[in-house]
Length: 249
Image 1 (tube, rainbow, N blue to C red):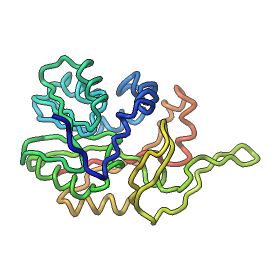
Image 2: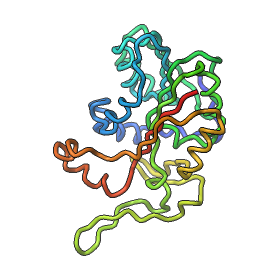
Image 3: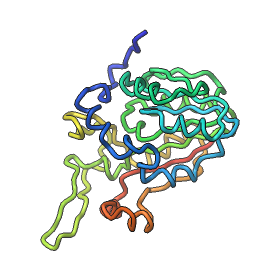
């Protein structure tokens, strides 16, 4: 049965041009090893062995496969994109993983069904984030963990994002409209991609108001070892691109 999408949902990943561009990204080709923030995210995760795991915005299913390899009891991957789920299913014959098409704006989850909920770079597309976080809180067992990454508000806030280079060659990231929360429309892999900007304070307070205890917050930047191996990451030292958050029910 086809998923009914909320009127707020932009299923950009099923756009052929966007999907084609996304498939060429390093993290799409190499999975978790191609995501430079993965070591920091991994350090925030509990040992998956024996846990019931939910991945929201699972994409190609890289994290689901990792959790299966680490001995998770059950893994469910959820995504709104038919193309993403088709790719994930083709890459993942593991019987411990189930795939589900669902809209994060209107997601329904059983109560106390999961020990760990994970999400990578999906929550900044969700307009009704407070509703989603309350849903996740109910779906976790007491003491259950939520670990997710999201585009950093400093990265999302500008109306015209992009580095500026001065006459000396120094790069800077202009910041404007930070306190003006709401949709941001950018051209990334396809025109008209809509993301939802919230301040760091709003994100943290929304977690707290949803019943979570914040356990870790990382404004991600590359390590020196990563810079030595991948000099192109140097511009990520000029502003945080991602926010990594750990929370507990």
